[in-house]
Length: 191
Image 1: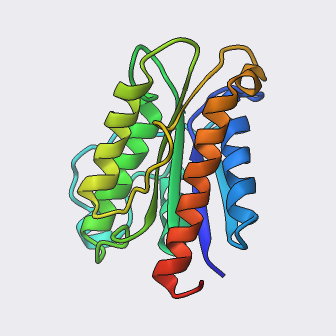
Image 2: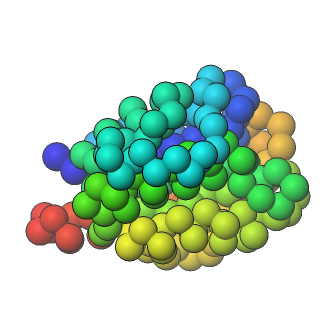
């Protein structure tokens, strides 16, 4: 059965980002695909140190949990990342993880190629589009497929649960998740 790996970059235990990603997972599972959400909340993700060892090891030389994500991602057909917006950008630990995942993929048969997915940004007020654009660079440079939706994949909310008030944002995410699932099924030949 096809699977979508979902990565949550929020440091909060009760986070709006996680709530939106759980809604995303629910929509994907309604399409008979499996999902797994991984939270970076308790992880201490380091930035790439440009050691080049990934080309020999086919994994990252740094041991902080990114290799576990990589192994799960190799078996997935889809990949969605969600981040709260910090000063108009995605969280640094998420971008560090994505950069390292991308480096390992490039030296390990480009395992990210043709995976379906995309980014989701959650913020109190603004910075969504810049954050989405920043995360999109990872998807495009790794030969991945990003389906659209009815708007950009962004939801408004600050206090835990506030995202529930953004009906349009939630519907946009549901439509995006539905498109991810349907596209994976088409690629896999399941109608």
